[in-house]
Image (spheres, one colour):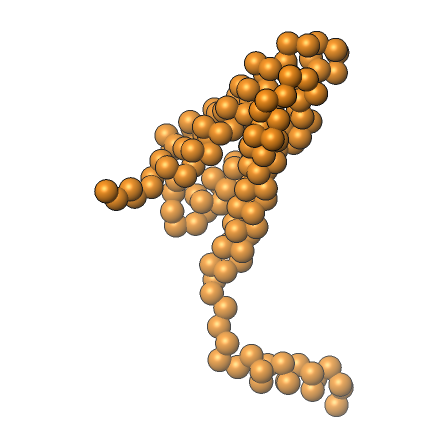
Length: 148
């Protein structure tokens, strides 16, 4: 007999009675995207909080990357939510998408203006960071069960 046959029999004996949940792959993919989504949020909000008092040299490149990650992974997470059993709240998703898009646009405009040597960049920085921070608050508190 072939050696691979014995290996296959050994593995099938080990796995006998072991069942795999059909939702496991989708849950694993979803949780992976949640991890990347939260990383984008940490980059965006962290760059904002760390440089909130700065007058020059704003980290717009980091903010563009963080906002891009957030928007991309958020869109994928909404699609994955529709593939699963729980459909997301469309009003919440619309508000969060508008805020994330606003943060991305403000970061891109600030980055472009900073590369051209403009000095009045604080409004772009605070708009991008403010939108990101509001987006974070909405993500946490929109459906929160707050007890008195």
